[in-house]
Length: 156
Image (cartoon, rainbow, N blue to C red; front, side):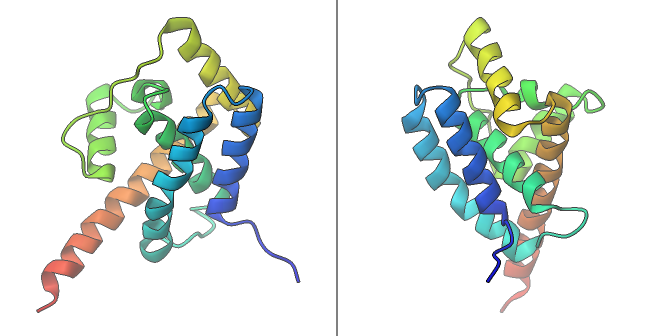
């Protein structure tokens, strides 16, 4: 029996590779990301199943990257694609996660840059590819929240 890679297996692979590349320096954050992202992944599976446009790898990597933002290891702006304006990016993030404010990144300068470099190495992707995966994932999450809200409001 062959098991096809899922969004969660891609996210876990990236999380484990990143953890190994950082010599488990951020192990507690990696554990937190693994636990925190699971409900979000379930939401995506229910409301935005994987398809040719929403590949499991892209959504899994996008979830992990966004988990790094929530864990305050990477600033949201580091994952913004160049074609998206700052304020639009922040609004998309807050809408896709039902937040009223952005998480503050606690890493500084050189450490932050090393984390982003290691993220690219662990994913075997360019920063531009990861940025697009984050945009796709947040767009899907925003749609999930909108549909879930409409569906919840339409039931009597």
